Structures are given as C-alpha cells and as structure tokens.
Image 1 (tube, rainbow, N blue to C red):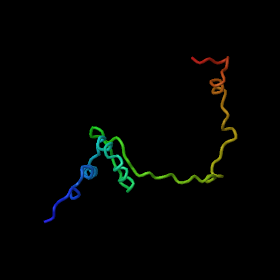
Image 2: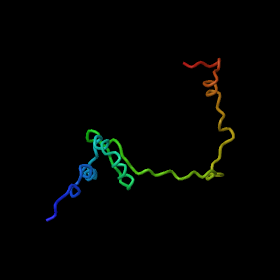
Image 3: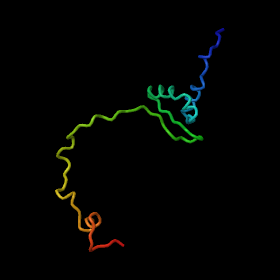
Image 4: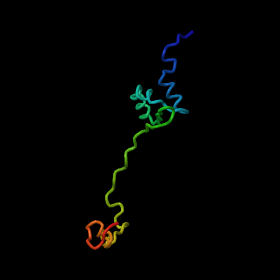
Amino acid sequence: MKTLTKSDFMTRLDLVLFNAAMNTINLYEAKTHFSKLIERVLQGETIVIGKAGKPVAKLVPFKPMPARIPGLLKGKIKIAPDFDEYGPELRALFEGDDDEHLT
C-alpha cells in the first residue's frame, strides 16, 4: 500500500483555483498567493478576483499591441482647409467680445 504524501492532496491554492472555475478568488487569497497566480496567468489562465463575493478584477495574460505602421491611412483621410476656423459666436466666447454679454 502506498503511503500518501502532501503532494497527493490538493494544496489550499489548488483548491481555491479549482473553485475559481465557478467562483472568484477572494482578495485575501489573491494577495497571499499573488506570485503563484501570476504563474498561472503566464500559462494562459484568466483569474477573477472578488471582494465580498463580487468580482472586482481580472488577471489576464498581457497581449502587447501590434507595432504602429506610420502612413497606413495615407490618402484615406481628408481634412477640410477650414477645419480649425470657428464662427463669430464661438470666437466671442473664447476671445471675448464687448458687444455680446453672456447671461
């Protein structure tokens, strides 16, 4: 008969993470086992953290943004020559006009 060792049983963190499929991990457990949770996230797992039984945060694997390609929209966007001009009402609001008073 084999003697059971601690590794034969689920650790508390394993149990918490196992239950995370249906529940959230509470904030205390997340703080206590943060580095282990990060290792699980690095493996592609998403972890939900809750406070008072309600989900408040999600740990997800980081996905870097693709590199920006300058000029990708060149020729597709048109800007009117007078796009930065404004009418007399707006000019009066910004620059002030003694003839018009705001009420």
